[in-house]
Length: 401
Picture 1 (cartoon, rainbow, N blue to C red):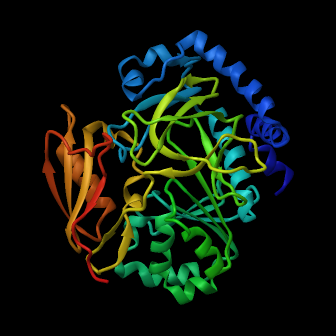
Picture 2: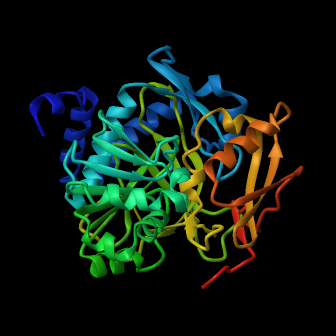
């Protein structure tokens, strides 16, 4: 990476790179002191109780600090875990900070800043592929990967120089299916960068063994409050203490499987301050020991891969088409669920908002999912499980084997 390009990463990037490097040698007591000093300051300003999405939705001004447009802007979470949340975030510093930690995680797969990436996640646009010069990344649009375009996709990807493949765990295997197993094995894939979902037990290690490609894996969420990397030594998830503070508290009501709630406190200085925020995600508490002293979970629960069958009989990762919607689309609805009763068709259950534009909802999803027939049903509520969560995808059809 050239000095000029490195400089463009910004001062917050270098500050956090330094924090990450120092924290690697901290003891458990060092980590506790660092986190407690920040937690105490936040508790004095915002209180020490556990908060939820409803607190930030009902009283957004209570948790705001240094909200100075255009230095801050509105960010929306995705809607796959329930009603989206809009909050304020730092335009420049947050992005630089995020790069510092993601690049640290991606380094486990051999990635260095500004290495070439091919991204097959939620980046939907009208072209099959589009180049982002700032990111040095080719974005493959999932909605454009129809059967008619697969020949073009295969020809294009076969001509690329060595690259890192940036995916969801589920979209990794969809990508392999789209380009074809034999071609994928010949591609110069230097490493895989896979986040936002979990791998089924043992699948990441099996992929690395079968393909000889290293995978960097992590847990994060749209509110940017905590971030954890998957440890190659213990296979658990370690939370960076300098990114934010993670607590693992017993589920309420108690979970039969002994799962814990992930409670997150952000250490961001500008915009919405998430303080002891119940992320809605669950984790399995860590067992045994690891050389890394960071707070650790054995696994993250509820980030499963959801796969539907399209009109051609292909298995596709639903998250690739839904996770990437972060705009005003979610203002039109309160909840959403996809149901597959037969291959090639998805029934979409929508709880609309009072000001919903139903035509906009349907137009957006039909644009993103042209390889499947969609039916829409507008309902007042979507059934939730015993733990209070609702599944965003339900399959009642196994489809072709």
